[in-house]
Image (tube, rainbow, N blue to C red):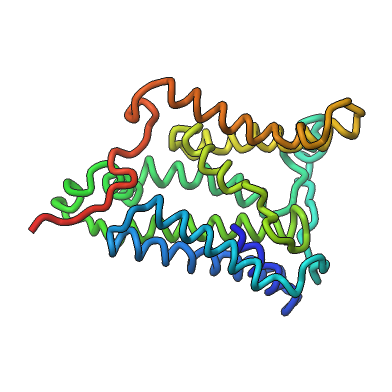
Length: 266
């Protein structure tokens, strides 16, 4: 997310094009995830160690690339767009239908990914590779190709999320501007038991908690801003504990081969 945020910001400041800024953010996410895929899929490295290493390296790289533009405004940024008719619905309109275009992209992507995973041959192969790669391999499914594709797709979306931060949510660049949102996203996947539709609903929940700190200060709630800012992260920890206590890995919906390198026998 950080390399996507700084890459998107730098591209927009260089070209003035939001489209190129988004493309740069996605490309940066793809590059980082390609490195992760190489380590974990090709070299069979531990996924957690690889992920943490790339996270630390990416954080430093983003800070290095963006040190000359800290605090500068972008040449262009996304503005909120009201959806005709829907945006004027009292209460609901402001919450769901008055956002910048990248939010609407997220609204479309979540059900699209769910449909692909559940109702297409591509989705069947992706799930098979995650559940039982040996069986999928025996059926002729190219496990390595599908695992690379899944990692790259996730990296591209992470880069898009970063670009959304620097070009829309908080236009500009500052070190560590993601403020741990990537870790919240990982917790959200567990909370949603690997369902894209539940991820969308959970994102609204965590987003509401994130906004709560800001809104509470506006209405004069007598609580320290630092305490209010902790709410999304405390909620993340609570959710992880509760979901873990609910049952086994299978009941949580995690793929059976999650985090397990696949090495073909023979």
